[in-house]
Length: 280
Image (cartoon, one colour):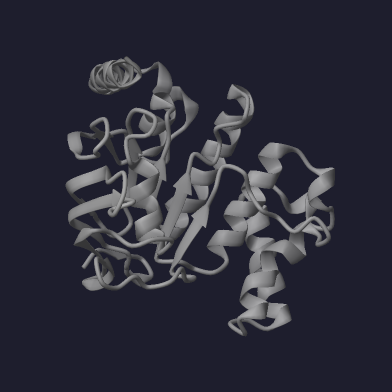
C-alpha cells in the first residue's frame, strides 16, 4: 500500500474490462468497450480524448451515477460498480463539475462546512477550523464571509475544491472543472490545486480537453480512443513536484505535449470521419 507521512494512502481505482452500452434495448450505443485502467493511491491521473469518446461515462461510473454493462470498477479492492450492482455516490468519491453548484444563500465558509456538519462528521467548531485551513491553502482566507455571487469564477472553483476536500475523500473526480476560465485564471487555480494536493495526496481522476492542462497537472496522461472508449496510449509525466508554471517552458514539456497532441489528434480525426459517415 502506498504510504505518506500520515500513513497509508487509500484510493486505488481498478477499472477492469469495463463496457457501457446506452439504450441496450434500442439504439445500443457502445460508449465504452472492454476498457481497463489502474489508478494508484495518491496518483493524479488525467484522461484526454475526443469529445464524446466516453471519458465522462467512465468518471460517472466511478462516481456511482450510473451502472456499467460488463466488467467491474473497484475501490481499494471493493467492487463499487458492476453490471448488477452500483454503490451510490458517497463522500469517499467526490465530484467537482464544470458548472459548480455552490449554495448562493450561504457564505463561502458555510458552503464548505455544510457537508461534514450535515452528515454529523464534524462539530461546527471542527468544520469551521478545517474550512479556514483549506481556504488559507487555496489563497481564499479573505473571502470566507462573502457569498458566491460576490466572488469571481476562479474563486468559486477553488471554494468547490475546498468543499470537496473537507470531506476527506479517497478519490477526487474532476470533470473539466476549469473549462470556462480564461488562461490566466486557469493557471492560478491549477497551481493552488496542486499545492493542496501535494499536501493531502488524494487519488485524482481528472477529465479535460486541454492538453497543456493535462501535462501540467497529471502524474500520468491517458489518451482514450474515439467512441467506444479504450485506452490508446499512456504517457508518464515526470516533472518533479511541487510544480510551477515554469515547467511549461521546458524542453521536456514540449516533447510530451507533442506526444499527447499526436495521439489525440489521430483519434479526433477518426471521430470526425465517423461523424461525416453518419451524416452521409
